[in-house]
Length: 236
Length: 236
Image (cartoon, rainbow over all chains, first blue to last red; front, side):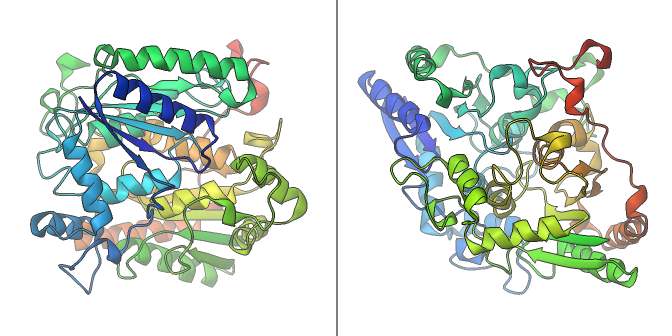
């Protein structure tokens, strides 16, 4: 497979970096083609603005999604955006490696979604979720947390990890874009214990050897919704 | 009251800008003190890195939360972070005005949370949620969406707005920090209809005249959780 790793951590000695490095070496040795977008090393621009486009459809009223659609039609994204979009089209499987900061992705990675997941490229009228622009591809979050696992259970103090915290990412960003998101790999508060780290790396290695067997998150296809975007009775 | 508006939209003619302007004029005319952080106009830095600190505790291993804690103790944040923290301490009520992009806040606003909501300043061991650093203050999201309201119902295609999409923001960012978050003001897909816009502005004006009466979101205080961070049986 062609595998793309989107990696967002500022410290090369971090555990996130170790997970990323392990993925590169294991996946390469298994015969996959691997590319990495190391957002901090690339000094990736996080903030959406007019510089994201080589020409603007409307100079007088800057509406980001309108300009994205226009740039898709006219191939006029800034080169850094175009490059990331090309990598996505090349990839069969995308891994997102990041620390969960403030119950979401770091700003540099949010900016990657804001800028690269463009209207026209990723979605258009009637094309989203299972018919989104990246359909046919799988994606997996590999994230680290600051708190231990127990805080993220359904009755945990920080809120259910899958249903609450990762939902906007897995469903709203990845599934919306056409990806088939698979179950995330979470390293719970790994920084506090070296032995834990080794266990997580061993566990992650196993996961990487069986990428194709990771269960997908069972989201509804758009055909399960009625014309008012409500889940049809028979699927509730 | 002292009211701070954190505003994140790149276009001064946008509907988000109109909502922000309305808040400034109405709240001022009601006798409140109002400050605005216009993140795009300020060219606010979104990405966390070493430049956020005037001196580092550990040059060899950059761990952001460790450096935040150190910077809190030694008053050595970069001036742009310090300024935002000072505004937060000044404020009684904070309004966040932004478009929902990819089911979350724009990257520039995520970066504001990543950088300004610092360990030591906002939270420490045992101080979070109802005992977080900003306790005694209220906060409200005022957000715009791209899709109509029906997509964000509990059985809607895009997921429940309050329980799913805004949960990481209201609970994970605002409540965690000590804020008492009140019900959000959502303008659903306002850009498609001028008449809608006027109705939203009128509605928002009413809301601004009754800020103190907006119901708070009923999250559990930390005392409702046991020593394993699980909600006690009697509160389920």
